[in-house]
Image 1 (cartoon, one colour):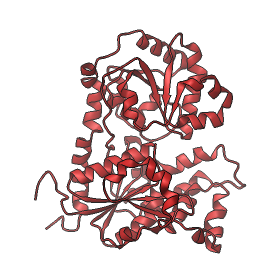
Image 2 (cartoon, helix red, strand yellow; image 1 turned 135 degrees about the horizontal axis):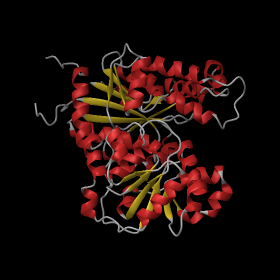
Image 3 (spheres, rainbow, N blue to C red; image 1 turned 30 degrees about the horizontal axis):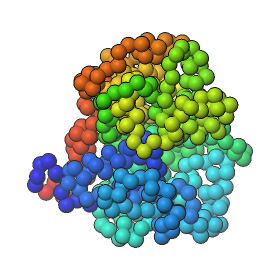
Image 4 (cartoon, helix red, strand yellow; image 1 turned 60 degrees about the vertical axis):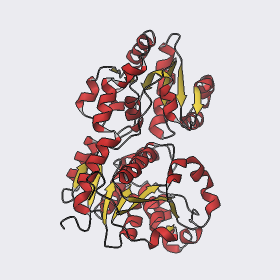
Length: 412
């Protein structure tokens, strides 16, 4: 066997939510690339969390397909619950009714349980099933068929994310509790053969809650960002989730008024969230927003400084890792570096600032200095930290070691 391609001939079902323009999607792309580099035949299966997205209704998947051209390099499959499955009495009573009380866990797993899959994907026999997010475990178990082992990427402690999402939602009372959603999360996680976690803090939490399971800390493979040629831009990249929206609002409201003469470019579909949450504030800084960009790497390539004004969220911040990969000077809140080792807080070129005034001061000082050249960015300590922990090479090596015992003939 080729030692550089230990999975040659293996078939891997890679199950992921039908999301794009977010951290999870970028993690999934890293997983696919790693398995292929290791020699495996990978079958990505996107599962919709909205009803009606049955795979045979190809037209309804048009926007997702258009937004995920990276998945066109090989076979790609789809799954989703048809409307007929969500109109039955059991779904209405056991899934929809809890959901209108805020049970984010039950609606996601309930739709996954009822998902129809692309026929070719379901007919195949797999050597390994790699599942992203606990709520897609019903699909993973179906494809594993009691034969293949299941590796589950937890991504985050999802019940915590759900509780944050629910804070602004007008659910019926009594509201679903964090404890209720956590219990469902843990129950489905117990069905996996190996649990892998993307950051150190949540790895420890899950180990404590599920001591009987096998766990591993595996930092994700995050695509490289260009280290040049550089340019005049001060950039902030963020997708449209609650924590990012709050962070951008904090930056615009609390930090920007303290900045003299500097202006940032805000890239990503976070613009939609800010517009919906704080319309007047958005209008004041409308020209700062670029909206969704096809190539986030190009934003870093033409920049001189990257901003990470994170004030909310849990789990590893993928956008922080991407910024590190660019080798740019960074100004970050401590929360932006969550889930990493202590070393990340003291890297040269990374300025940690928690308060608005210190963040603004650091931004103005960095803007007044000469921007780094491409060679300086390539050799930046933040870039070296990325290479050691989050590069494709590091991920492939660690992933191969973890899954070797899960393969059918690992002991032969």
